[in-house]
Length: 300
Image 1 (cartoon, rainbow, N blue to C red):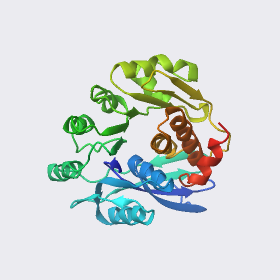
Image 2 (cartoon, rainbow, N blue to C red; image 1 turned 90 degrees about the horizontal axis):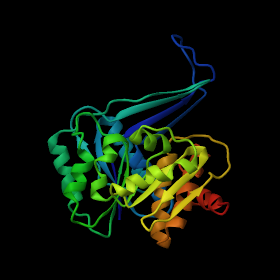
Image 3 (cartoon, rainbow, N blue to C red; image 1 turned 90 degrees about the vertical axis):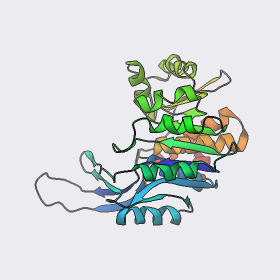
């Protein structure tokens, strides 16, 4: 089973407004609502690829119930933990001449809710994969990722981490199966600017030396680079297509990589499926389906 954790899920309310004017009444020309959060995105694409996945995390209020309904509707096993206070956040994405975002806070996550999460993690075994993705609410310990990996360190669970700054750096000693920074996040760790694929390898190698088994670096339209645990380096430009929506592309890359690895036990194929899935999601309004991904995979 592939488990994902989304610590601060959201309802993503996406609106198009042809000519948004600050301080005036504006009318939308298009509206969409999706369940949001990096872990949920990973689970959605995994489900689209035909893999069993369980979504873990925290939900509160009427928005939490809608998130739960939507992920169940998409065929994802739901083990989200209910929170008694507040409501799950709403993230507003406004598309006009410029694209703007307004992200909510989400509910306070107390110690009892965190304890319930650990109880759910107790049933994971070495046959499972766990994805830790995205930011954590300010009400939770800043060490949440490393705390979870410390808790699971003797269980031989393959753990995937898609996070930034200290959330990522602090888990490297636990030898995560895969980490997926983008080029900006990788550069931020070493105080450098990385914009070309041929600049990535030395810094990704440093993360391997710090403990990561496989390092997958996404670079939006520039493509991606993978350093696998066997010492091989794979890189590729992104498949060609029109960018429609960049939200969830990185999460789709994670899901595609997991799919390719589980299906073929081959890192090169996993890399290509990751790149294809990320691009396929970027080229459409909703997250990628298997047919979209397979079509792009054949072009690599």
